[in-house]
Image (cartoon, rainbow over all chains, first blue to last red; front, side, top):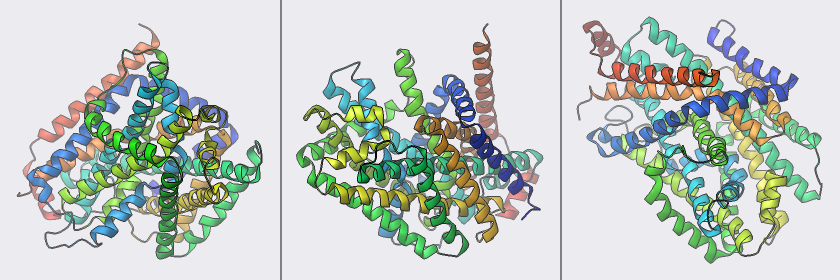
Length: 494
Length: 42
């Protein structure tokens, strides 16, 4: 293990960030915020153009004759039934992020947009922007990254590494070896930092849930650190033994709880309002989604520009950070499917699910603000982590639903860390599908340390900028491997 | 020119160069050696 320079450098790099963050949390957060601020200002057009190109490319690949190409040998059949496959695609997206942002994100946009227009238009646009962040553009990033990995791995027989497409198309040259090595390193770095952020968000969410359940007001850092310690204990065991089936059960349980919560809120809340919100946002989304991908808010004032940077750009860059991780997962489960099936499934199913999710949790928030005059916007300002629980407290069986949310957040974080440790170990050992337990444990510890750094920052904005900094270089790598795919497709007979 | 403008220009020049390299890589003709190497690994 210690003879592998990629593994050692990746460990050193991520470990360094973790140590820096623990010793000087404010310093790391400030540095990340300054640097992402500079990069976002000068590259906002490039980020939006890249994600729009990836979306248009995905649609073109699905409808072009290349859509008939199989991700595998021509006689390979799909490993999973279509229903299981679609369910697993849900699972890839269903994470702690949706639980955290369900109500908080649409309301955060609403707070800014209402300064420029009427409340009802602001609510509509806030829901649209939320769906934009979690919809087709996000999934185009994942779909294309996963498609490149699946194509070169299952159809061409290369290892499941980010560097493989470059070596496959341009041969073993000095630049492909160098850039490929750097790409594998940056993929590891982006995943590790991204998962660290996910751990922090999960801990913040669970902390608010526990405070809400036990009536604690502002428990401070001790509760967050106690929850973090519990999470670490919970994910160490699955890293030591092969619990692949058990992990799938845990992930499915978390998914079922989250799905149940959504249905409960839909039925126990103002159902007509929520259903109208969902139907309205489906139409609004598909009518405006492609042009909005090119929107850069260039001529707006500084408040709007800051909002655009801290939300749209941050989310898009965040999806790039997750792309190697989610891409490997969706590629792994899609062997034997055609490019057309793959793109339609990966992009449409999770997008519709997100529209439903935010339609329910976002609209219930808007119902509170617009119809009941409930002080949700004050909660959002004072403690964004508590927004979901504030909504649940105003519905029946609030203790039960709060416990369910805490449990789902806990399970999502544990399964994410275990899967990420596996993928990171796989990348760091040159694509070994059964990486050694020691390597997985080391990654588990590093991910925990990165999570701790983000918890110590005690700010979701700091978490977002630290992730942004790690993910920005990955945009270049995704575009490079897309060129490899397009070049390889030219030699396919369709 | 302020330092912010200089940084902004340099960052964008890097992006333009990168886009240029991508276009060049896409249209670059494969040498015979590349082709045979790729076909043997396929």
